Length: 316
Image (tube, rainbow, N blue to C red):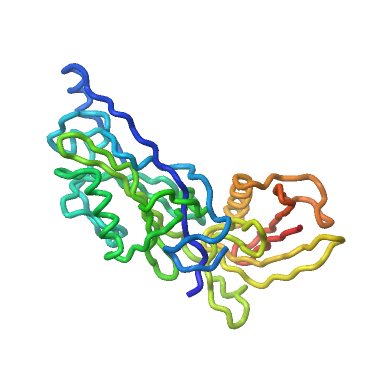
């Protein structure tokens, strides 16, 4: 199946060591609680211009978590007092967990219409080291169907650069789930904590109405007929397009089909173009107004009334 570049953003900041001073402070901390384009096949490098600086995540440097400096169990570690035993069933069935992984917490990081759902799982593991955790995921993820990915949809859509070797994609029907290993830290007493950030795709609409005859469906994160590539809602399908000249410029129109609603598509386009070099202009471009333009003079506009048949326009 043809598929557009699914891939990520850099991130990950280290937490400095905060050792307990005094018996009263140690007792207080012991009870704390916490939670945790280009058409290519998923799990490979992204297409041209499909990278960006990460806006979320924390560094993979090995540091100590603040809290009890000599915990006897996971519940004594900051953020894990309300944790539950690790269970890789249901949506976690394909997620690799070491056999000695003990407890975890879960939090929703992103759940917006038409975008990837991002869940964060903080995991506590006894009798191990940070290097052993990195080694486990580097060596065992592929055996459970995960392919190393250079990008990750940290904001639920845009495939930004991962920035390290600890991101993977996994086939989920015709599209992909994503996994990122983050924030691996020594917690004292032989315990290590780390975060797994999981991205699950949105519901796919029926896009057969715009598919050119004889073409197979390809899912895209970027429109690559323009340079630089234009971010589009995740897993967008391209339909027919046409172009015409206006003076010394060319207007090109591409029909598209995306997950979500007319409102979520329009919001995504405004947000992502604004974050990646485009700004709104009141000037007339190619005979009309309502464009966003970048420093290269590429103007983009869109009209969305039906999410399964909306229109992207370029003028350059």
